[in-house]
Length: 321
Image (cartoon, rainbow, N blue to C red; front, top):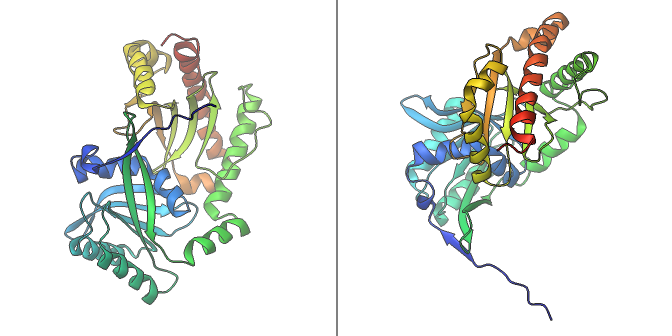
């Protein structure tokens, strides 16, 4: 009879992973917002960290993807306390937030009850979430983090999901149009992986380079910037750092391939992934209304997409790393 070997889960102090809340934990949370989004049930996109609100600084501000609902996130590494609760309400009022999220690894009962009470007395336009991150290892594995929702408004996630099912938000409509026109432009220019592609409401679309854990993505980034990135997203940080360091050693060659574009070399802090990228500032309002302007953007996208796919194929897909 086979015996299944199981590892032992060990809960670890978050301070072992992030020694400083502002310098370490907040950037990590912003870079890994998808994990928090998955826990609470709807997608968030980060717009700014350490945003000034009066004389205070809010950790993270963003939006619910595809809507104008403002999201404010206040996080800490210690037990929940009155100070952070007060700051959270202050930030929510200052930014007219719809979604207010308090992230803390140790939740005091009185603060759980306070958040429940806030949801009881406010209408459906204001929604408070209390979320607990738990850090752990399995035997001697790399650390991992899982988010647990301690309390949330019972109606909010259900209503938001139903809204997504009913119709696209204006932002989604624009993305679908932009990506479809881009695919058509690329296909006409004989770019691989463009012909017959299905459009998407996501803020990015990806293209393979022939190696698992490596892709080239075209993204609608924050601050009205288009970004084309060679993303290293293998299963471990060590794999991605190894590939990134190999590319970095070829920096002069790679930047020559990019033909004068300013290349961003981004290790992405404490995130698992790494990337190299090029950016292009654009007028989003004009892009929504002007087809000829969108074609200008595609003229920038097409060659830079091809160049980064070439970098991925030549330096990574052929096993040179």
